[in-house]
Image (cartoon, rainbow, N blue to C red):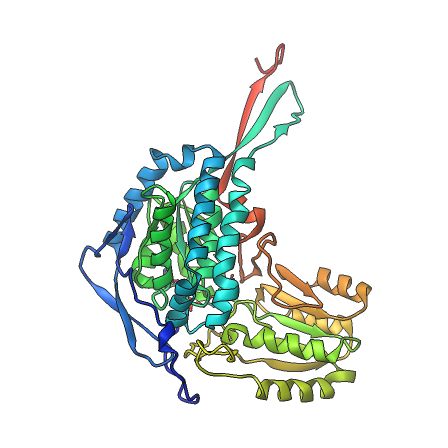
Length: 459
Ligand code: NAD
């Protein structure tokens, strides 16, 4: 778990005009902002200077219970799962419009909460949240099953039905991005939910709950319980009335979530966990592009990206020149106040090293000779989230991409993500996809309906 600290090495300017008023600090349960049952609160700090920005309600087991009661009622008896798809889609589109009307304020909330670049939040994270809602809003009225070609005298078809009440547990590095990767397809599927944002970054999630209500999402469909992992988070993963837990975070906590799900009600589990992703640079790659991609791959979002390219393998003929260029570019990388539009990296938080995932801007640069050797070394990790391959040789790119055990392969690019592109890991990076139609299907059960046809021996 990370803590926010100010960066002692950087002379931080202040861009206080951007700091927004904090409007929402209470839990959001059954359509209302409420204090926690015990009345406790915790501090959230500005990582630029370590100052307290707000005190936020600290939810625990009792609050999760209330949120689950609301979500259960909204699922079992409320309008959301029963609404025609196009109506759910209209409400989701309205939610997207409201996000677009508040881009500056939302981007600023993530900057003072997570130290994220304000310019990137404004241009990418927040507009993409609206795009993601619209992507799934367009799919809502196209959820259907199949007619089955049965082998005997039977007629059969499948229906896709919402899984039920979903518990979402999200990390601090993409407070908006991960929130919508989970919430948008869950809404589209007709499920209801309890969302626990990371304790380091609770602010934008509460603002989104307010906007959802304003857009017409019925009470109880989205509940936000802010609080800590071992209390609020653990209460979600072990709850008997939650049908599925969808977790993004460290592999270490992923183990705990799965264990709690297994020993409670065998709820479904989806895990998006850590990575140690390789970037492979063959000797025909363009050096300028390759060094730019390698640098962005490890420094984007301060290196606090699950798919960060933390192992860079460079073919021996270009290794020395690559290293020289990379170091020169790294030295020129502008670090400072995340509100400063000229800065590319805000204050670095302190990190715990999770065995072999350093969740930060630390890259291992290594030399290799042959394709066979680099495939073996790239696969030599317990993670399998992503990999990058830089080469002009399409045969090489195709061979290596099929040989790497990872959920996402980038050829001649890195960190290229699209809402239509399923995202998730192999091996100990987890299972279950976010984004794309795969994420929508994750929140839907398949039900088979079978009936004998006339004169069938089954009659
Ligand atoms: P973390 O695992 O410490 O925390 C993630 C969430 O889990 C937080 O909301 C936290 O409160 C909660 N939590 C902590 N203990 C819990 C418990 N016992 N039971 C239930 N919930 C608990 O991770 P972090 O430090 O917030 O985020 C960094 C990690 O997330 C990195 O390992 C990174 O690779 C991973 N990550 C993965 C993806 C992906 O898509 N694969 C995306 C972003 C981050």
